Amino acid sequence: MSAAPTEAVSAQTKLLKLTARRLEKYATLLPKVLITDDPEAIHDLRVWSRRLQQALRVVAPPTQSKKTKNVIADLRYVRQVLGPCRDLDVNIAIVKSKGEHCGNPSVEQAWKSMQSALESQRRPLLERVRHDIANQELFKFVLRVQRLIYTAERDFDAISEATGAMAKSMNRWEESFTATRARPDAEGLHALRIAGKKLRYRAELLSELDLPKVKPLVMSLREIQTTLGDWHDRSVLLHHVAEFIGRPGFLTDHPDVGRILLAEMEKERLRYDSDVTTALQHGGKVQQAWATWRANAAAD
Image (cartoon, rainbow, N blue to C red):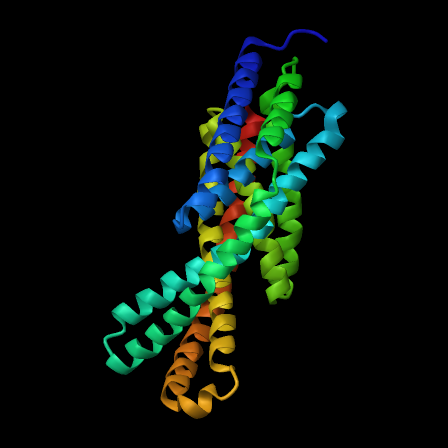
């Protein structure tokens, strides 16, 4: 294979270093989740697992596809195990904030009751999460990823590979966005949120390779992902409240708390609809940013 241009080699070297640093960050955070109760450790581990996954999809040699799939399966498993705990942590923070800022003693007490119930679920859930994560052979995982990175030290155009990966993600995102716009139900919104995460992390990877023209796309993706994240958190909150007031005998024993939380949930449902409208508006901005990126790339 002929030598790549100097700038391509430089981008290749930088991409391999970025991947190695992402591995280091992931490998540092996983043990931290086992020993700390900090909710941010769980969030950070999930984020860096995605960043590592998208980098590996670009740098891993095609000849190592089976090994790459196995590594990515491990990363996905960890995220899936951590997901319910992350959702619970976010809802605890939301409920706590609602209680502190409602300005009504009765409503505050209702939210505090809800907060206490959610907090009582965290310890047993975290213990189950830690048990599952502890089964991951971290040292072997690190060695497997390092081998993929070392094997990737060959002549390849990092910019071209990363751009191609982003284009594939964009196609899948646009398919999901079109379907969601036609029918904005929970299943479609969830699929759009997942597709947006993959696209965003691939776009961010290009940005880290010193391609500033991709930053508007990254910013537009952050906007829609923030809105869809709020929608997701609100969906989980509605579920948690339904479970809380739906316990046998609760509404009979605590009618005032139940009435207040039901009224609060009606407010949340209105915000839920607003989130969907806003997300679809942000989706249009993503399409515009993508069109601008493609035009600039073609001009270059």
